[in-house]
Image 1 (cartoon, rainbow over the protein chains, first blue to last red):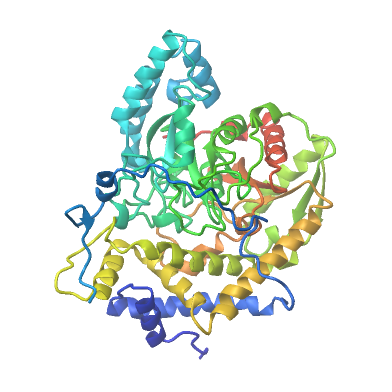
Image 2: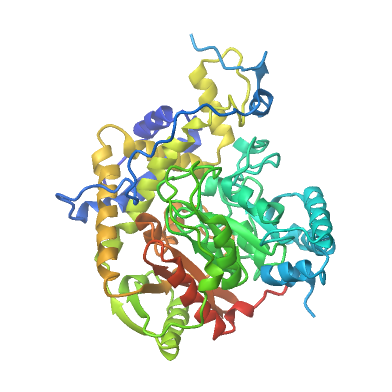
Length: 97
Length: 487
């Protein structure tokens, strides 16, 4: 049997890092699918990349900045309109502490 | 005599401008057509019939008063549902954004409105543009107008299907790993992914920012050039938009490829490429000899790693981009009472996102996590450099690269959806243009068993002129672009 690249426990942990709840069934199917996908991805090991710099971005632009000028903002009611919950003109969030 | 909804953008514009065609009647005919067939095709998520009717009446009034109406006066355009339209819901085909009403327009949408274009609706897509079939949409699959059992390609499947089924005259899509070119190929329309940085991404809901571009899906190359002339060009609101003078690409279309040097990468015809596709695309390449071009085979060895490098990069960027969906400022949210904040977020993201989106976020998080960053993400970015170097090298000898857009013809809905890796493999020929940022087009080059096949043409960065001229020459000397599905 092929070595598993990622275990069910690891999938659970990474899903937790990504803030995504998984059902018991998904933990099984995702683990199996991730192993198949990672088995394919690992092909990249064969590429010779010593001394090759990474391409984060294809353009030569560096640190594009603009003048720090205040502009008219969107109206508050427009911005808050999409919030599932609001109170007194604020977004309502779950209790953090 | 063509029905008004069958016309191309140029005919519609000329007809309206000269008052031979009434914008209101044309839009109303288009909306009737949509009502008649979209229950079968499912190209649209939202149809903006009221606004479209109102906009058409305004165009007619302006024309009768001889006012300036813009280069797309009255022309119906469908917008992919990941491009923000102020006041019209923009869902990304996701339950997460089912009720999201953007407070602003994407730059491309502003530019279209300024030119008199009429937005007729928002098109179906794979959820958050993650897919090649439009099957992962929360609103159900779009069906291929050529054969309703087949996928239309994706992720901009709704846009391509709407154009070929005459439910829109023009459409916009977005292309992160082939999402414009794939459905263009599968539905037999023209689809262009512009050079990275040519078209503003402001207002495009991000999936993988370093790879994606908005671009046209149209009935012919002229309309593609026209639409690109309008959406292309510098936008200070997108920091990756490149400051170059705006061009009128329609003025650069010539039926002429004398001396054009065509390179045909062997890797585009590997074991994964279907024989029917190979034959059709080679026939197309060979035709160019008759038009005065020359071609030669070449090899791009680094392409072997392109698909894996693409998916690692796209998933990593997706995991970061989609971290913003917590269900607080917008998006799906269940109950927040009595639960830990982390549980609230995790539940919102479980219910709000479909399984492919969750798969990509989790794998992307994995590829960026401590211990795996160098092995997957950084390695993928280094491979990206190798592919760019290979491209730069071959483009010293060739003006364009040609090959198939898709390795296989359109397949059945449901056939591959349970095998993510098999679906990823479909993108093997389109991702190189995203990794390198080069412009690439898919144009119709034939039918096989009644299903469309697309020819892909890639040129140097910001050389859309050559891409379009090459495509235009093929179109002017062949009839493939005139084929229409019977629906």
